[in-house]
Image (tube, rainbow, N blue to C red; front, side, top):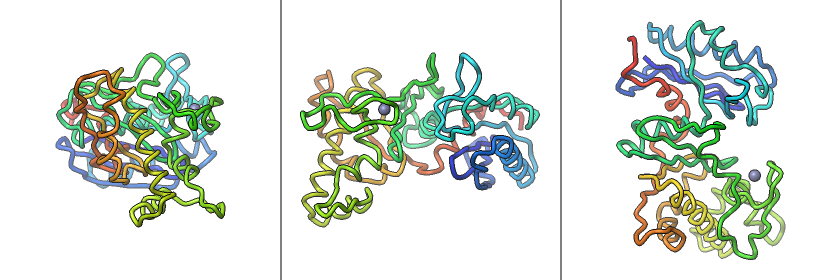
Length: 303
Ligand SMILES: [Zn+2]
């Protein structure tokens, strides 16, 4: 049995998977925000509850909103800031009395979709998360490609390629730069790009609904959005040339993306044909927690 834990900013989700990927049990609790020791203890309780329900011991993989620095072994790049600089990996191994695998949540998402999700069977999968932010992960033949600095696949803080004049220098990003892909493709970015004449901002869902209803402002914002996604993904295809691209996160529910983007990216792709499938995530919100469980391959299971 494999246990996956998705350590989020608001909740800790835990899942127990059988070797065949079947969900055996699930538990969740609120994340003790700002409380590091409380976070460790809460993860321990979720693992305990899953093992109680299934009556078996499991391997444990954890998806975190950040990365473990290969220089220091400490957490970096986490928006759950109380984890930054902590030795989460060794503290969890001590608390759970076993070896634990930890990976960035976007990498876990990509792994889940590569193992038995929308990208199953593909050699190279690029997993994209477009939601509050814009993340990404790369899986090659069932293995997460972590990278020397644990940032492989993090395309969100590259500048938007082939920008129009109106897209330069672009919005300010929290990373300190301007015009990052995230400032064009995240949910807040889409909302900010479609402000009504009266100053009212709409959510991405409202923009999609308004565009479908013929609202010209919303339709124009959505056209800009898919054009920008096409340019941003074309530059990924030019570097990585993945066999499939899988989209997750809140904005992955915009079906317009899958119909439009592959028709727009060809002019930017250095190839006579551009046939990369662009697919919606199969497991939706569960991809992170499933991918965490898959950090331990089913073939290595003791039980
Ligand atoms: Zn940035």
